[in-house]
Length: 434
Ligand SMILES: Cc1ncc(COP(=O)(O)O)c(C=O)c1O
Image 1 (cartoon, rainbow, N blue to C red):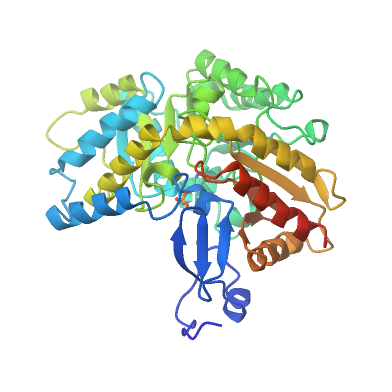
Image 2 (tube, rainbow, N blue to C red):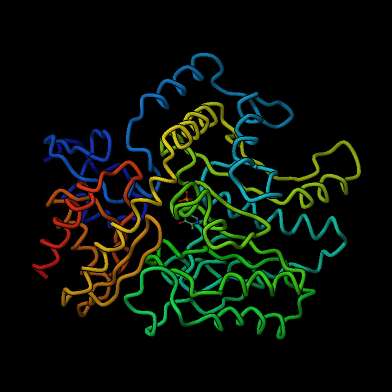
């Protein structure tokens, strides 16, 4: 039991009362294991929070950050810059789909979303189409917690007490369909759900719509893989109606789907990609937005004078230590072919999650690449079983994220096949108690 005074700290996205009564403190990490205060070893089935595909505490990253901090700890990035951020922008542009090669740095996924919204507005304003300000999003979407992201959000608890939000945001239906239950990969049913975008266009007029935001795979609401052809149809509608397609790849970016980005896996190229989680392997806060070259050019060329072309940025954008961590991380991904490893390991993960469907407590299983989800049959209080499960699993030595009554598994790409089996042994044993 911890001797820490827990009174002062207000924990994010946590039931503070329950946590403080029974704290689960992690004090050390190595490889794909966490260690608690009693030095109990806990298998990390979620790459931290989708952040750490190369395993924890990689010395290459620690050294790069430490060297950077000893050489140049901070530069203001308004009117000044540090060389590492240019190098990093080029390295990221090598990974993003062709033409999405202008990179804006931020510190989190939420900031990446706010930035993408503003870039969409700035682009149409620069083109003389300032009337295009509506945004389209989707039910069961998670786009972070800042007010733009809350307006796009499709999760009621993330929005309900926070007011009306941005005006002019319309939500398409989510893509979970009973007909696709227990499908690993893309479901056969539901391509027509993409035509919700067409209905928004018919109702509001394309001349008023700036962008359509989707997670290629909705991650935080339980891994909702798009139906076959769905993303292609969104792309087609956006092309026909001059709407920017934004992929929020905060979870799916950097190998999670077995390719650089989900855009590559699904063979659909958006106009903007937001990214964050795995960019520094979790070692430093960072996010980024990749935009089409001509979007950047339009905004930059339209600006009249000496003032910044784009009135947006954060004190910590392109922080030198974050850039150093990201460069070291990208080296590891490349040198260890980690995205290929993710692709090779995926069938084992998906087979293991498919087996869960045999348990009575499991209502549905889903997955793609190194990302899998399952639904528990809820009890009278929705979400209670999911919260209990993550606690029981932690006590049994497994770190796994739940959201409501859904469980999410996202192992690091360095996980061995034996360790995947071990994760599912623990998970199955605990689930059998329910
Ligand atoms: C798809 C998506 N977008 C945005 C975010 C917000 O990222 P952050 O928590 O870094 O602000 C998340 C976080 O889980 C996410 O999954």
